[in-house]
Image (cartoon, rainbow, N blue to C red):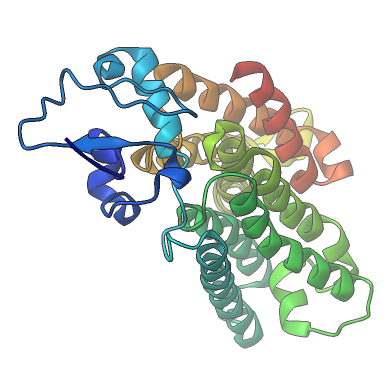
Length: 319
């Protein structure tokens, strides 16, 4: 029997979707050692890891599937898998350019007046965070990948602070991110927005449904609440005349549906396991976030602060 070091991800659906799992990688990276033989019987052979202690025979039960999910989630960066730092740097540059290109596009639409200022701002609000989260699988798992990913919104935090304090002049950015064209608004809502994405990346990362709930309810939920509420929100909520039933329903529905989409997206890479319990948890969080957003307290402290705080607090209880 000749030992060879390979990825054991062939037992996960992620193997067929994620290019990282197709080549052989180092055992020190995954902690998985397999042995190849022409007459090898995979049903009777055990794959052992000093880190995960995975047995192929256990993959038919829930515990085995969860352990394999943990192993898959330990994968390296999408590019330059042999060099974690180089792969994460490439992922950071690519993700930053991707997010910046979207932001620049909205700055141009704001400058040219293609959309009214409030709609343009909400389109930025809805898409930037979700687009950035699409890039998370490019990074390696673990602390290094999380930190490298968090650097992108962290850089935006610095930019927002400089503009909001009047140190850096950027009229296009102000028009695309503020309600009334006042640069001082950026040190409130936009700052909370960027901080939520940075902290979700750094603290929770892509294996946590709390990160999904916080970003999806902030971006898709709160964004659609304003867009739908302005267009169809004729019937106002009794305890807050600035909010409508249509907007709150749209927020809960959008936050929930997009959360499910990202749950499925990350499960394809093996970062988490889909379940009815998780689906119910996302529903509870989206409803709670919509209720808090409709309350006058959100107007006082800003939706971009109250919605992610609600998502994190309720998510901690339900997950």
